[in-house]
Structure formats: C-alpha cells, structure tokens
Amino acid sequence: NGPNLNLLGTREPDIYGTMTLEALSAKCELWGKDVGFGTTSRQSNSESQLIDWIHRAQKDGFYGVILNAGGLTHTSVALRDAIAGVAIPIVEVHLSNVHSREPFRHQSTIAGVCLGSIAGFGPIGYQAAILCLSQHLNDNQLEAPI
Image (cartoon, rainbow, N blue to C red; front, side):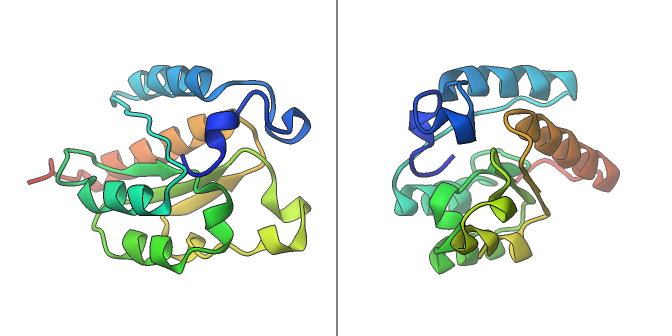
C-alpha cells in the first residue's frame, strides 16, 4: 500500500470508506488463509521504500504482490520499472473507481506491467485480487522462490 493509505478510515471516507488500514490488513490475512496463502501487509508513503520492497519480494519469499500504489499509480515511472524488473506477478488494486474520478487518475503507469487491475469495489477489491493472484499461482504451479 502506497502513499496516504495509512489514513484509511479518516481520509475522504465518502471515496475510500471507513475501514482502517489495520482492519483491511486483518481482512486480507483471512482472505489469504481462505485460499491457502499467508499474507504480509505493508504501507509506505515513500516511493523508494515501495520500490525496495518490490525488488526484494521474491528473495524475501513472496510468490506475488498486491499493490495499491495510491497516487503513484498515475505518476511513477520508477515504480513501473520496478514492477517490470521483477519475475513475480503483481496485481494492481484500488479502493475507488479511478476511471470515474478526476481525469489525471484515468491513466495508470503500472497497469501495463501488472498481471491485472481491480478498481472500484472498496475493500472487497483486495479479496478479489487475492483470489485472482492465488488462482494464477496455482494454475501456473509456480515454484517456491530461490
């Protein structure tokens, strides 16, 4: 989770809802268990931290990443290049429907290098991303990271 997502529950609740990041992380843990995967939730307001986590994800034992890059979705070529540079699948997710919002939010710099994108379904979008990622991993019978 990228910039400003630490403010979930209080930041523009009419757009992002009232669920806190902590509650969303707990839900993701349950949804991951439902499909047989463990989850780790992270959030940073720092673009460089997000890039470092993506670079290290496979080495750190992760099979995939679900990424809500927040506003960096629309601006960060560096984040796009980090995603393109790793060998694990990444699913882009957004709580709000970015395509029904301000025009600058309609373009994602990361969508083209992600496995897929889910937007507009609130917290359930994370559940959908977990389900889609787990199905992709199971279908491709990916080996454990080296």
